[in-house]
Image: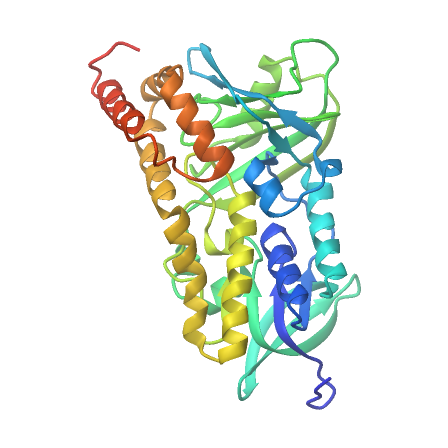
Length: 397
């Protein structure tokens, strides 16, 4: 181990042990790099917890972590009319972040990453080619420092690494998400294999609310970027209207969720962002776990190239590859959010469109496998014109 004074040296320090950071750390450690994974203990991210089959396959998620298997989604309009969208083949997995994240961190540790409970403070640079990461360790909060060639910031939407190192990070657009995990009620009205999504202005003026089954528990949540909108009030109302008000509340969690991938994920030198810190949550759907883990994997690839060649331009590869794979979907979803989530009249039409079998099939194809199915241009065209027709009210909903 190299010492400068008595300072440990790593190839990479990953800040944040959620899905993005844990994946990056595991991949880098498995390919032989010295990795420190810093995670602030005891934090659980509010999250519906849905993971598509593509994620389960690509990241080898064991069945034991799935608390539910979802076979359909119910879209609920402002008028309370609803449309059921059966998944068709396969299922969407549900995980509880309370258990999912520690599993991923443990997997990184088993791959050889050094996992520590630590709170990132700042980066200083006084050795050529090395950054010094200052952090506080454990409950007592003792000041520690290590040196590293690269820092991967995977510390969430309000990333301390990103704000300190990446220009423009502080202006990242965000939705604030809040959910309550409640004990599942007895009785048939709660289908443990169906996700309910509420497109109603009273529950969210600019996003959606949800009830997602998690086996023994249920996640009841909502999100909004609107200052002053009461997320807790909306959840109280949603629980009251769905027979969940008397159920025991196990925990309450809130967090900001980014709405747009940042233009830059690296500082051109020794810092690279991944996951929410880079802004990779899908607009309109709010889906984040798959994109976070993919972002972590691409960060690890770019980091590997950087460590071998010593060329900081390699760091930009993570964002380039991500946008090549998913930029188009993010753009389409962003347009959807901008168009359909603006008023209850539009939300009513949006849910009406979901009755369409073409729409359902394409939605599930894209969600389950993360690929826009190019083989169905006719269906894409049909949907596009139906969408326009709805938008311009050529058809009654």
